[in-house]
Image (cartoon, rainbow, N blue to C red; front, top):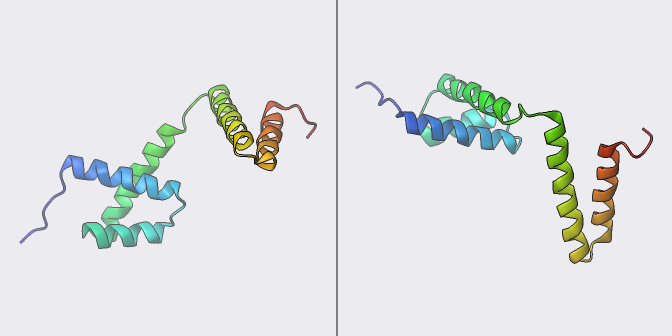
Length: 108
């Protein structure tokens, strides 16, 4: 009996799952083992999902450099505020130093 083909929704979910695994620095072999174990597909099919996940990741990061810089600075500012509220001045200082480096205030 031939293997059941995955639905479009299943494939999309698997690709998103692999993108999330890659974001957590999972290796290719870990991802392939996961796909074979959890979805019952062959390693070659997992490689196809990985290729699609790479495209999703590339689109996610295809942003303007100025926008990315603004996003990172905003996140660091929030981190510094949270660190001050939680009495973690060393973390706040690290965030401030990172913001200064990104903004080019310090000589390289």
